Amino acid sequence: MAFSARPASASSYALGEGPVWDEARSRLLWVDILANTVHEGSLAAGLVTPARSWAFADTVGAVAVAADGSLLVAERHTLTAVALDGTRSTVARVLPAGRESRLNDGAVDPAGRFLVGSLAQDDRRGEEVLVRLDDAGVTVLDDDLDLSNGLAWSPSGELFYSIDTLPGVVHVREYDVATGAVGERRDLLTIADGHPDGMCVDADGNLWIAVWGGARVECRSPSGALLDVILVPAPNTSCVAFAGDVLVITTAARGVPREQRAAHPDSGRLFTAAVGARGLPTTYWTPPACAPSS
Image (cartoon, rainbow, N blue to C red; front, side):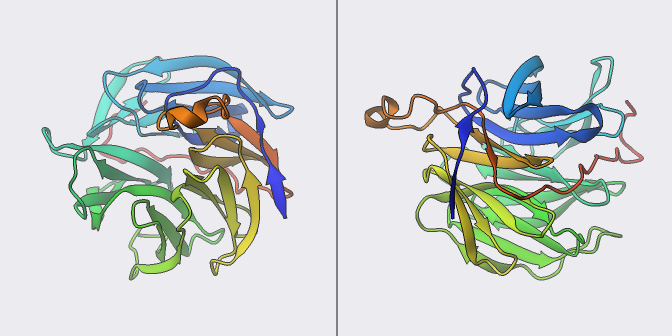
């Protein structure tokens, strides 16, 4: 079955990414990586109304929210906490200064830890990382990636999915929720027509994968079988998240070939779709014991 997504925002974004549904406050968070901005808005009847935003000095790859509503933001090389009063403090440095890489997609695991990966901003391949932040600090899980992207967990938390965009691979491994330890990484599926980007998992355990350059979101079973497709009228579909039973899709205006721009005027807008599935409950970030409190 093929579903269709509809535009949900009046504004478009250079590189919209990382939607997060904050269920406790009924708000949607997302980022515009190239505008160095975190956005907040409300969602009603499938439409997103912006409310406020936070600007940063450099790229913003991802945002997470704590139970009290404070934020964790993945800036270019560091993780920054934004307290309720707006005060900002560095939680951890992930990438060394001067490295031609930036932090990219991140997500909160079922126990409240934050995981985030990186991508190269030059032509290096196979050197990017995926890390976990917890009370022990920053732990490297992978250090051989081309472009770390979407992260998600099965409803039980026992399986962890991660994307390496350039080779087009969705990985899966066992996950110990109690400790954050991971099992052996293995390939679940490969997407050849476009590049897998952001991802989420629904309450039934199915994966929803945004396909950059493919103008679509794919729904895959836990075994990797293709179940459904959502057609998106924007070539660069970047990430997805459920807000209850509404699927929110971010896209990018960046990277659309000049000859395609007139045919895709909604590129960069947020989209929504009703797909007959429901997301998992919001998982809130738990600041590490060593991190500044909000």
